[in-house]
Image 1: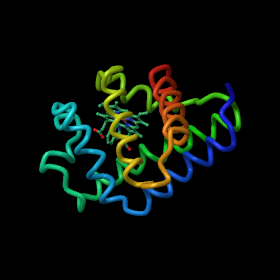
Image 2: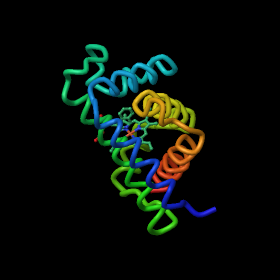
Image 3: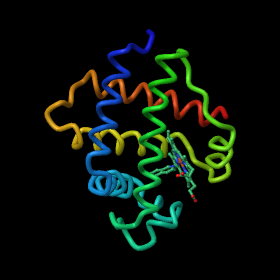
Length: 143
Ligand code: HEM
Ligand code: ISQ
């Protein structure tokens, strides 16, 4: 069905919670990715010295990704579909990013947002984030 105003508001609320402590939540995010996919360390040069929350590149990349999930929710609400830049598609295809890696990142995103929103977490919030992420991931793979 259509992406609702309520779902967009839920995704926005999770983004606001993430922004409340970007260094802390970035650590949760990268640690979760590396637990499931240790090889991700080789994909991101800023992980060479481990998950360092004071590394501005590390937090900036996480913030960018979380921000795009929020944009995805806004696009779904406004247009019913998500379009990703061609550049975003080409960087991921050049790096050979695959479906299982998209799944690892999704699970890490959900885990991080769950921690960020605390007792405001709900199945509804989780599924709104999942829809926004999945639509964004397929737009990136298409672009
Ligand atoms: C680069 C977003 C999924 C690996 C980028 C960039 C963006 C981005 C915006 C440009 C550089 C930056 O600003 O960070 C996303 C989004 C994703 C996603 C929104 C999911 C919906 C993935 C996955 C992987 C991946 C699943 C593989 C585990 C990379 C790599 C780069 C990159 C290796 C190049 C990093 C560099 O060398 O600067 N991504 N990404 N991405 N992404 Fe993703
Ligand atoms: C994927 N693409 C770009 C940036 C990222 C940051 C953290 C984890 C995955 C990412």
